[in-house]
Amino acid sequence: MAAELENAIQPGKDRQPGKDWQPGKDWPAAVDVLNENGRSDIVLLCEHASNHIPAEYAKLGLDISHLQRHIAWDIGAAEVTRRLSVLLDAPAFLGGYSRLLIDLNRPLGTSGSIPVLSEDTDIPGNVGLDPGERARRAEIMFAPFHDRVAAHLDRRANDGRPTRIATIHSFTPVFLGVPRPWHAGVLYDRAGDFGETILAGLRNDEALNVAANVPYVISRDADYAVPIHGDDRGIVAVLIEIRQDLLSSRSGIEAWANRLAAVLPAQQKEKAS
Image (cartoon, rainbow, N blue to C red; front, side, top):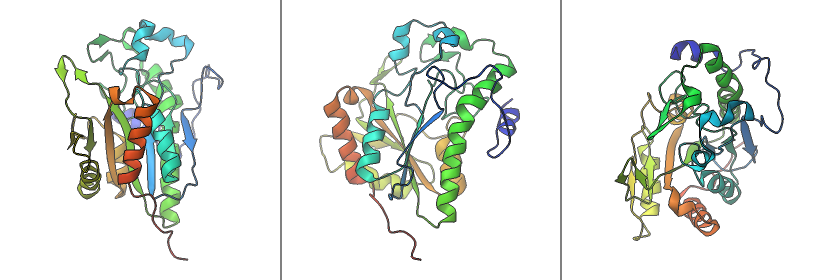
């Protein structure tokens, strides 16, 4: 199934969304693009920016309170990304739908792509989906986001522009009863130098508990953006996780955006003409 879905949504292929799909307030764009012509060498991604679920999905059978939890989105991540885009003069790409409908940072066809269980919560509206509905979500929500990112990266490569990718996420302070002590983590596979540079900058604040590859490890089977848009293109790419309770206020969001802006290279010179 994963291979079939991947082949169905290769960038550049002609396709039409589901016949009953209509853009509008309840069906926003799959990607919100900010500052696409920004001069920074950093490209920001925020795959879990939104908890939006169109009305036809009836909250996937969940109580509305669950849609405010981490299972539906990465709390605070969108606000940090938007602020970073301004501070760094960086392009940013933010997802428009809840990760419960389809997770933009999971390979298609995997168990995490359209989860039937998230943390300890059953997702009734994702149980027993037929291939048509899986493909429809991929067409409407997944493919447009990644097509837009891929096209942007292609243009940068054609223009000879330096590029580094930073994806912005948040994580729960406690996961399935296990406390997570870190304030933030920087996850990477092939971008060790970039990741360690960010960590070193954050560790200048001795009050921060930050570490590499926490609260989990990048995996091609369970991650999409870093392997596909980063490693496969030869672009250094990291995933930055911030503990979500630290992003529960405007001051917390500003503080973390400022921290990251200070440790991420703001921009590099354009290729000499």
